[in-house]
Amino acid sequence: MIQDAVLKIAGPMKPEVIRALEHRFESLLHDSIEFHIEQDPSLIGGFAAYINGTVYDTSLLTQLKQMRKYLTSADE
Image 1: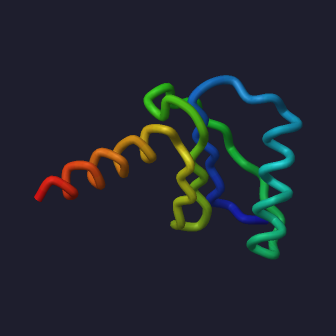
Image 2: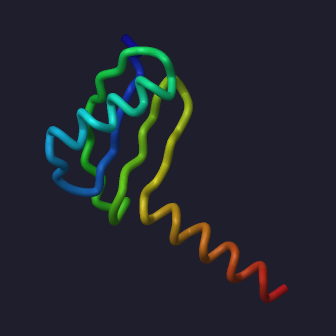
């Protein structure tokens, strides 16, 4: 089992969705996983998974930051 697995979510998430994410990461990483869940409303939506020092971030907050960076760099 992977010890350092944290799933940060913006709000409540159904247990079956969390299990589906665990299964998807197990397939990706070829290892068993069990998330420790933390709610973080600043994410706005989506999730960020922290697994053995690697961050898999699909949060809306990160997407908005990337969009802002892209749009401001396009002006230069």
